[in-house]
Image (cartoon, rainbow, N blue to C red; front, side, top):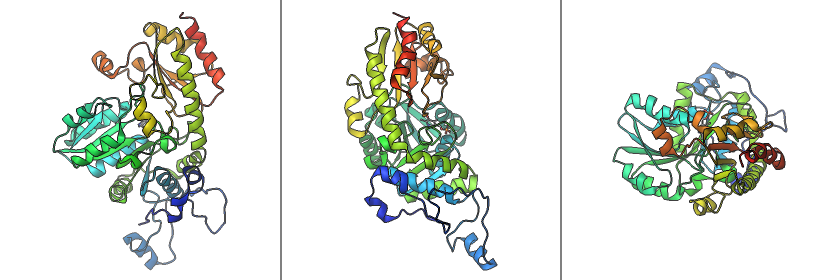
Length: 400
Ligand SMILES: *Cc1c(COP(=O)(O)O)cnc(C)c1O
């Protein structure tokens, strides 16, 4: 089959250039922009060529569940940006996590994961992987001792989101990678919140990077997709799952994400700059009890975040003074912000985690996860920051 080896000259390019130039093999049509290949299969010049392509003796496209040129452009570009040998694209972020688990784990294996994970990831681990004899233990993200205590000789995979959603907790990726490798396990980082523009987990020692391309890689809320990035060895197994089991990315969506990557660096810097300023403004507002953002000096893991991240991301957790009623009143006073659980969009979104994204947790689980009734999550978009502040000030000012 096709290999996704990177052009060695790309090693000399910086991230901003890779985001725009990497991964596109210009066709004989000499197109300037990356083309879309909406085709399910590919044809051959002869029966003998078809036989060689099917057997894998000759590299080339056979069927778009296996490889597709538009999908490959996205994979090669993202691999280059994350500094991985290879990327495999998937139909969603959840498909990326599922494919990784199917590829690298078997019955009896154990996962240790951070407690503050995306909700569907927890369901995937507990409800579905659990059915096949793979068990998961959850630990406090930033507590390295807790990770080590939770590991057993059967632990094959450590899985973390950093910074976490919605409280912006951070784990030292290099230390967690060292711990994983000392126990013969792999470390996977879900890098959805920062993207390679602001954090490159592989360069810190992680083995696998997981993406929901649905979020910032697209950046405009248009398409669902995902990706896994890492070494050839593990990614060949992930590729085997995607090609056989079928959670492959559509060429149209791959094209949207490829074009999204071209502006990723600019967008993430702008998202992060607005979020930092908004976090500081919220921190000083009399109706605010606490702000959770790793860019604030008061954040418990601010040092680690400053060391391993090139920015602090766009998701700000804010606890208002009061309870659910006060938090809801701030949401309901907005006129411009989108009231939705999604994030990673040019449009700023606001949500009340305790009754939406984390609504299915028990009161005890919410307490452990720090999801209080007065907590709001703001995923800062690219609108004018003064307009975002004004939209929030309406509700916040009414509380004082
Ligand atoms: C959205 C999200 C996912 C799942 O991605 P989908 O594309 O919705 O399947 C996984 N991890 C994180 C951190 C997410 O925000």
